[in-house]
Structures are given as C-alpha cells and as structure tokens.
Amino acid sequence: MWVYSTGQHCSHQIRIFDYRTGRSGKYPQEFLEGFNGYLHTDAYAGYNKVTGIKRCLCWSHLRRYFVDALPKNVQSPEAAIPSQGIAYCNKLFDIEEKLEKLSPQERKAERLKQEKKVLDAFWAWVDSVRNTVLPKSKLGEALNYAFVHKKELMNYLENGHCVISNNLAENSIRPFTIGRVLNML
Image 1 (cartoon, rainbow, N blue to C red):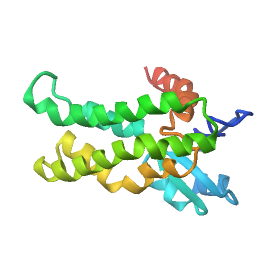
Image 2: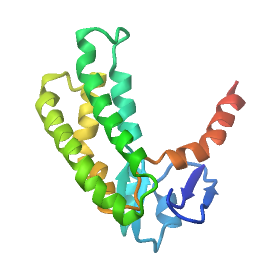
Image 3: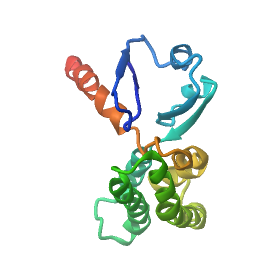
C-alpha cells in the first residue's frame, strides 16, 4: 500500500491510498509523473526513480535510529552518543512545534534563525563522532544514515510548507500496517 498526502499545512488535506503488489520504485514514479515539488519520504531508494522532485527525509526516522542504538542501561557511558543524537532531534522537534502556527514564509525565516544553528552543531557532532564508532553497530548505522542523507534531511529548510517528518503519511497508513500484521497471526 502506497500513501500520497498533501502537505501538513495545506488547507484541504487529502490522502490517496494506492494498492500495489510490491515496493518497486516504478509505482511512485508512475503515480507522481508530472509532479514537481518537495516529496517527504523515508530513505527508501525506490523514490530515486521519481524525477522533478526534491526529497525531504524524515527526522523521526533518523531519531529512531539513535533510539535503537541506545543500550539497555541508558545511564551507561555507552548511551552518551546516541542520547546526544536524540537530544539534537528533540531540539529540532521542539522548535518545529513552536513554529507550527506561523505562515510558511515566517516558518522558513524562523527555521533559518533558530534551527540552522542546531543543525550546524548536529552535523559538526556527526562528523566528530562518526569515525569513532563501529560502522556496523546500531550507532554506526545511525550516524552513517545521517551522514549519507544530510542533503535530503536539510531540504525542509528551503520551504516553509515542508515539514520535518513524514509522520502525517506514516500515521495515515498505520491501520493498514497493523491490519497486515494481525492477518498474519
């Protein structure tokens, strides 16, 4: 099941569910033919087939990578680096919450004022710790995910209509996902 959604800040919210038998990138390529603009997605490579778009990747997905990298004992020294990644993500989400009611133009300006410095610190931190952890560890995967997808993670800053996560679409498709899991039982 593929879901296509208008942006969070659109006055008329629309969700289109497109049932397809697989996850091939040809499906969004066909559906979005002729569309130009920002596309909020996860990092699935199938979206790379869609032309005329600028991808905005989801910071909730990145945050989840850091959460998954936390050891069982979150008070242990090993928790320091993933906790810092989570803290950066949380700071961005806190700022976004405060900017929610602004116009797209004001939101973009405030993001550049308030979030850009957090993002600059985050990317400097990623660069400083990325090569100090095992690349195939959960933490290494989190840092590499951020490093590899930096451009797409930053694209939301360019337009006040864009959002920091694709939670709207994720939440729209959740009932199908839960139903699929329950049908397997």
